[in-house]
Image (cartoon, rainbow, N blue to C red):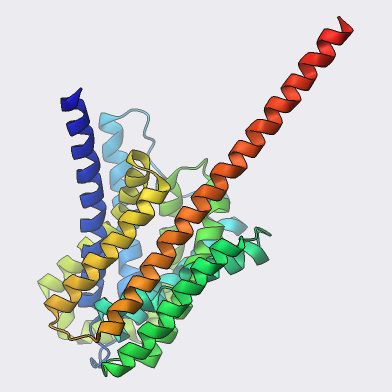
Amino acid sequence: MEKQERASYLKIFLVVMNYWTMSISMVFANKYLVGSRFSSLDLSLFVAFFQCIISVVFVLFYTRAGKMCYPDIHPISYSPSIGLSRNMVVLSGLFVGMLSFNNLCLKHVGVAFFQIARSMTLIFTVMFSAIILKKYSSWKAICCCLVVVGGFILGVDQEKVAGTLSVRGVMYGVTTSVFVALVGITIKKALDIVDKDSARVTFYNNFNAAMLFTPLVIASGELEAFWLSDKASDVYFWMAMVVSGILGFLIAWASALQIHYTSPVTHHVSNNAKSVVQTIMAVTIYQESKPWLWWVSNIMVMTGALAYALVKMKEEKNQRQIEDNLAKGEHQSGSKVSNHVI
């Protein structure tokens, strides 16, 4: 029994470390690719465009190679009726906005501040859930959101104190949060089209996004700028591009795996803990010095997000208990009526 428990804990540990490694690697790889705000070469859109192409190729390879080992896996091919459906096109459009502003944010802020810059995602998720889905949050959940907002405001202020504030970076981060929240809401409708198959929705979403990115990277001049730069002949840059594209697909798989072996709340806890490690790594690697209130802002954002997850978990549990009690009550009433008739 003890051996089985140790094996179970080891499996969970490896799953969590797998998610942390992929997620943190993705952020640092993207930072390397988009560069800093002081660089005259801006490849934010081109990097996102190329990553979408790599994700499409990887999904095609994954499904075809997987069929050799698992007959249940079916190779994916593009179907216009699915790819051009309203829900899928809307998702892809929002996805393009999310990737674009995410890379622009990462270019203009440091990796250490990246989590704070995008921390308004929770706030917009609550707002859009109320506006679009008519799902309203309790006062406890709203209080958790206010803690996150407080951490965001304090973080921006302390970034200014440290002399590293980029107003454009913060604006890009807030805009990214809007798109992340909308993608989280619309992806559920897109999944319904493909029978909840995450690989297929990833394929269609990235295929459509690559098509939408094509005119953008040409019109913005990023494609031409890339071919004229020394990056076009940099082997390490191309390797980082390919790896980041594959990681983009694998992160979704690692998240699903972590939720499967733990729980959605544990996934939130893990994500917050990962953010702490990512922030510490960034401050250490880039040799940054931050005021103590800057660290407090990080703690506020992560604590607020974690508290929100715990509140929602408790509310959902209570709701299930109420529904179960109602169902039992109806069953008992039905039994009494049947006995009376007999």
